Length: 271
Image 1 (cartoon, rainbow, N blue to C red):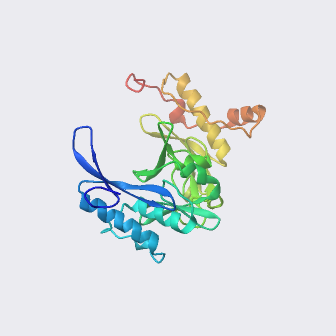
Image 2: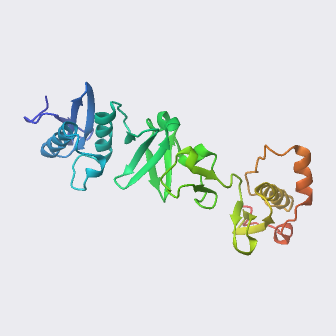
Image 3: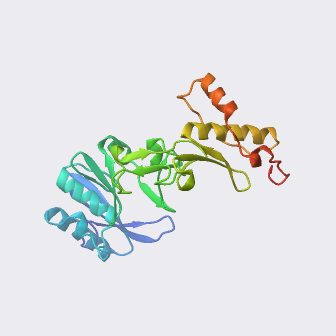
């Protein structure tokens, strides 16, 4: 029972004494919270919408409209529970061999089943075009699960094989670059890898035949800059696949831009 003669509606107070109304219902022996609202009538209408959703199998995720009072994430959660008998707190809908994670009514992310446990307990958020989750108090980019740098650019550092940029199934992600400061470029440098380092702007280190050479060139540029007196901290590229002797040979023979070799930091650069 609820309050104010409205089933599923419960009166509550915030710490400052403000009254609000919680809406919830029970389905398949599971008590499901539907949200908090400013007035009992809205809370009851949300409760009514949730009951209609579980009683009408014809209603699907695509039937959600902006006029709907039931929050969209709850809409997805309830439909998935109705159709698949699995309850998640995040807006996941189970498909055959994969699952969908809805971050909005028009944005359906697709993930491999292997990621179900991870995303069933983590909310995906979007900011500045980047997708991330809160993990142990940190904001973690979802692309990090593929060995991709958090600031990587789609279609430069990695690609979605089928062209769907919302499809994050493992078989659909092709990693083109896992190294700091390395970019695959076209134009007159087609099939070349450009190494770039940021000092007080981006400095081109050089163009190289493969990503490993460019990654080692980036490391060499860091060493040169530090030798020249620049105190800025950089993350070195760790290249596990290259033996130390081979690494040293590549390192010694790489050509580095004269702008890097001759760069001398100012006091402002070292602050």
